[in-house]
Amino acid sequence: MPRHVQFYGSMYNGPLEANLMDDIDNPDYWYDLGEFWLRRADGSLEQVSPTTSYGTEEDLELLRNGFEYEFPAGAPRIRYFRFRTYEVYNPLTVAVMIGQITLHGSDR
Image (cartoon, rainbow, N blue to C red; front, side, top):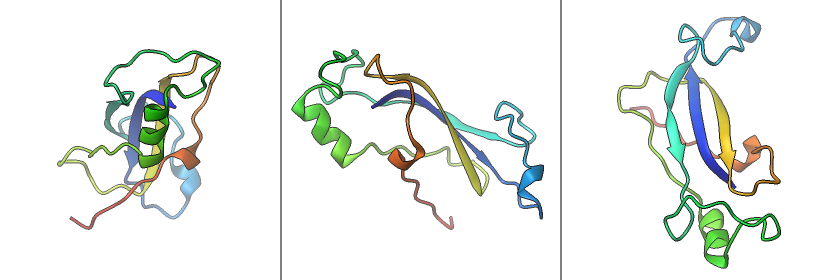
């Protein structure tokens, strides 16, 4: 379960996706959509035991229901997303898969 993540978006709309530079720290290509802390069911940011994997039953229920965050109101229209995982709750886990993240858009 991710603990601390950051999302980026790119508005690149050119003919070649290869032209979209991979450097997410480059503000010419990537817009910082914010850093987010995903709290456990009890509201804490405490690590879990490596043997419990995701924590308590309440933590597992929270994972099943998902987390919801809104990006800044002034953010540009985004076509490509990237994310950076800084920390996870289980110290034996080293990555978060993109399949664990669902994004919803708006025409606003």
